[in-house]
Image (tube, rainbow, N blue to C red; front, side, top):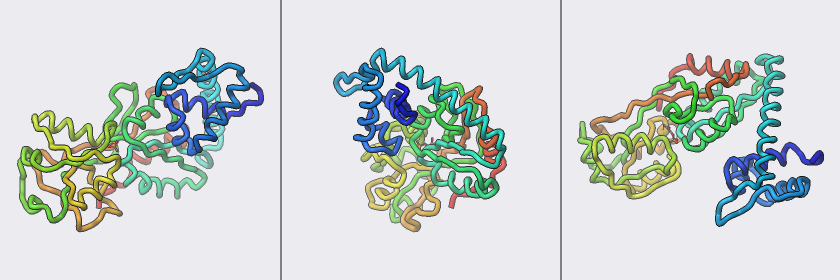
Length: 300
Ligand code: PGA
């Protein structure tokens, strides 16, 4: 085992956490053959199989479970070590690990700009995934801070609102409802609706509003990103509800209208969260304070 590398252990514990070689390869930005090779070497070193595949699912063997516990211990010690060193260096050097939901990618980098300028030795690693994935990362204590559209419900975490998030109804600019005012919510049920993928926080918020008014939208298509939805709106495939932040910078300006619908905008906030009891590094603490006073970004 002494010849096994930390990288192999990282690959192993990522597969153990995600239950899939493919997803682990994606998350670690490795190719699948590389991932398989690392696991093969590790398995040879252990001398027992670490995973077994039953049907499509991957399970840990007893040896795999033992190794997973050992890895958790090793990585926790390591991150405490890294944090101690970063704290010794103060704000001069270190990494800020952030995981943000897909919709936050429209403003998170803009918020990071001034912070990184003020602390030039700080590197930032920014993971962008949908709400479900970000919550998995939070539960696994993989990053310093998390930005999401609603505080975590099933995980014991601290969460503070720092920025308003308005969800609006978007339609092609040429849509017949584009000039109407105070459109009844029930009217939307007649329009083909474009929704985000399951696991998206935006989708969950929209479903909650419709369910509370007992309205069933006519879902025409499910799309895995805000960008794809905006393009589909422009392409005339339907209407949708997205955060106003998705309209900043690269929106196909002039092609999309915000409809004036009753009960809209859905008023939400962006939250910055971290597991309760987590000892934040000096850098993470500074970023948290910065977020709370950050200039209020207005969606364009
Ligand atoms: P999403 O999350 O990007 O997963 O839709 C946004 C939100 O929670 O508001």
